[in-house]
Amino acid sequence: MSGKKKERVAFQGELGAFSQEAVYQLLGRRVEVVPLPSFQEVFQSLKRKQVDAAVIPIENSLAGSVHENYDLLLNYDFRIAGETNVRINHNLIALPGVNFRQIRRVYSHPVALGQCLKFFERHPRLEKVPFYDTAGSVKMIVEERLKDAAAIASAVAAEIYGARILRRSIEDDRRNYTRFFLLRRAEEVRLTGAQVGDADRWKTSVVFTTRNVPGALFRALGAFALRDVNLTKIESRPLRGKPWEYLFYLDLIGHIEEPRVRNALSHLAELADFLRVLGCYPRGE
Amino acid sequence: MSGKKKERVAFQGELGAFSQEAVYQLLGRRVEVVPLPSFQEVFQSLKRKQVDAAVIPIENSLAGSVHENYDLLLNYDFRIAGETNVRINHNLIALPGVNFRQIRRVYSHPVALGQCLKFFERHPRLEKVPFYDTAGSVKMIVEERLKDAAAIASAVAAEIYGARILRRSIEDDRRNYTRFFLLRRAEEVRLTGAQVGDADRWKTSVVFTTRNVPGALFRALGAFALRDVNLTKIESRPLRGKPWEYLFYLDLIGHIEEPRVRNALSHLAELADFLRVLGCYPRGE
Image 1 (cartoon, chains in turn green, cyan):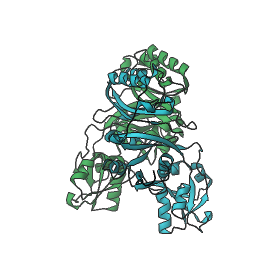
Image 2 (cartoon, one colour):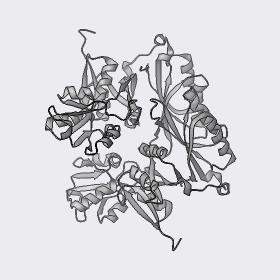
Image 3 (cartoon, chains in turn red, cyan):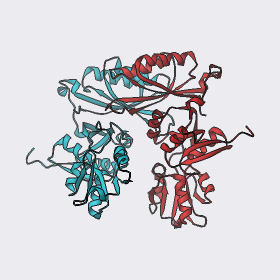
Image 4 (cartoon, helix red, strand yellow):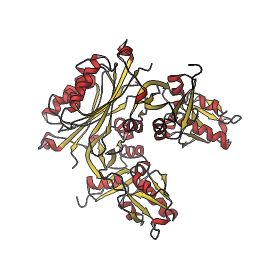
């Protein structure tokens, strides 16, 4: 890769966000990370070719799916080209020189605050203050030189902004992981049967709607179950313009060029009003 | 009902919230409404018998499910005793005497702001300001006497706080409905076969987990499909402590005392690690 121009990779949040860790897990450290304020801007920048790839969180093992990103996947024609799981470790972070007793307010993203409730129960003097971003709350405390405040964020965020970790791993539940997708423009992703090898090492993601008839979802899942294709996730989202009808997002184990998977998808296509393959990518560890 | 003490019914939000409209649709106007700041407090107040019933939003036809309430339904042992759909109508509301040209900022709940994007595109001078509640934003503008600000909320909120509607129905999509559940304490709900009558006029909601084996969800849905029981909604939520395993919430058409539904549920119980009936209630219109 030497001599090549570094890949530019967009993510939502400030430098030091968990999404940045996901970028490094997926692509290594030799990329240029491009932090952006919103998921919408991350998708836009990939579409406008301002970046080569994007990394987005899709679900957290405690908080559930990031529904905004499911909706954006439908509205843009990108391909999921990889996935990875990041262990979420929440740390209490403050200005250097500030000690724990001085802290009165704790800033972080509402999801992060909600994942450290036992810590707040043990320290009732601490006020939770919702903020737009975990790493962004560290940045703000350092820029504003706040001495009675701390942030909850990753260890990397503390390092980047020159802040200090006062308490490590204050999350309620250690089994806290976020799953991220690597996205690329459709025309830049090539899939071939030659990749298949051990098909269990691949995942394929699709989105579809069923006809609104009894048993429609059961039959759609049958396309996979009758071929022993293992599903790992199903997510439903409202179908715009048709109240109380739904889009379904499925993740399955297998490569799209495998006959079993190819047949299951053409069977699903017979049953579905709409079907799109979102990507086929190596399984995260 | 005359002579009886009025029922007290909790909902999340300020007076004039869409949830209050749902209370009236479900129980009529002869109840005492109890507005509370958070869904958690709504559930707590029902548990502590501070109220007789609670009304919560469960899904919006554009924004999707209210996942926090799905999680709370699991953590409290209440019964769903009714459902209703409220048409969501967003109005631009300001102090009496203020005219549209004076407005610079528009306060509302982020979901409501996000449902009026075309209005904001037509009026680029207006700044969107996220606020904790739709009706609460009207209340605040009236209390603070803000002359350069408006709120987006229901017509009822304008009436309650003595504000004025400047623009009606500014939502992007008219097919905007929110579905609400009426909740009661389990021991106060009685279901009998005598109710069944036209079974299609009832719904039953359940939550379950499957064993983590290939085809498990397909077989679970089979318990219903093979008996022609029609499902209207499936929602998955993360299972705490088991990353990448899920709880499934299902709504089906039918009464729990119908043989078809009873048999489907005992079939599901054979397949499920965990199964709970959340309620059986008359279908909303």
